Image 1: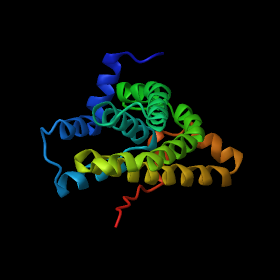
Image 2 (image 1 turned 90 degrees about the vertical axis):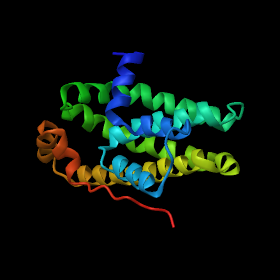
Image 3 (image 1 turned 180 degrees about the vertical axis):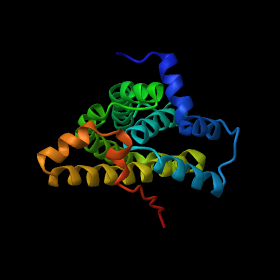
Image 4 (image 1 turned 120 degrees about the vertical axis):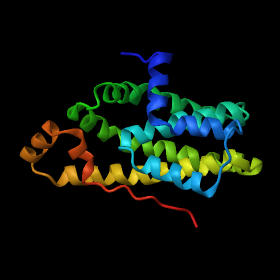
Length: 194
């Protein structure tokens, strides 16, 4: 299954973070400390797959509206966001449509999700200076997304460590369990920069 624009719009509407980012970039809303906190909390409450695609869509919006795309490093970041949207969009769409994901799909994607988060956070780190020079709302949003990507990366890493120490029969039970149980044991922590 390949996502079309309508499917992506359904995902964006359900996640809300990309819509908020878009409104803030278009200056339809002011970025207050309450809004920053709300964005942190909203993303931290997502399961890692939803957080990953939410961050990727939001970063893609910042790139298309705020950055000079002639930079090679920005092009690479843009390609990484597109890859994440393509790879996880279908899983997220299925989860949104059925209100329940297939645990084995989430479990299988969890294995690669850690690498995708790591790749995304490395690219976000290496491109931060481009937005820092501009300052403003775009940089503040970028920082929120970057912090949350790092945090969700730790959640995935913890979940994978838990899976690795389980016995094979426990893993089989985990795969057949509801997705909420799969991620529930990994508390999301909001890390605020000082």
